[in-house]
Image (cartoon, rainbow, N blue to C red; front, side, top):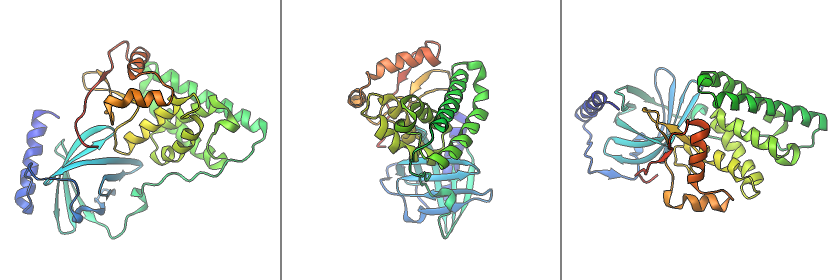
Length: 309
């Protein structure tokens, strides 16, 4: 956030305080949100919020965003979105909720009587697995292999990163249709390789209901079966999508200066212990590997993050 946007954000927060008769005293730190904030809200542009005690679910068109609530200081909310912190200034006047974010954008929401389906956070429903004809299994294996290799070619070529969005959407549509037909791509029917590739393709879709649905299946297949990396990657991705911190350190991002860093860890002091329990080497090994694979040898740093969530 630039100095100008910080000043605007501070001004907006002050205006909220003056107009709504509420306090933003930074000394007032609460672990719970005001009862009046909880529930469903809708903006005029059909953006929906579902404010819960520990998280805020937002739906804007097809995009679903979950922010974890870290703490509240008066009207200031400290949130976690994709591992990174955000600040919202929130003010309520009757059935209207106004929110100013760090960029200076102010949005107004009207209270809803019921929580709409758009912001109900539920796993995708998958049918149980059943035996398939061997030719059908071969066809699925070949299709997933081709889609996985295409993704990897794009991800490893910085010049092609813009191609990834359309490929991701195609793969999401493919996976949703396939899983609705055959259930999860489990290792018993499709083999270890295809199951792992399917999990990684799913991870790249960022489709939270889909990821929530398959995580227990991937845990069952791989957490303690010598393929812990696939489970760790998916587990961390789901935690970040849910507004939490990651456990194993598999998710890395670049900052504005192009410096890669490990997104916040739930317990940096115990991360190597968690990795060891699922048969994986220390985090430093992964940092070195991903540095050369994706970031042209730039050092991938661990940034220690304060906050309770």
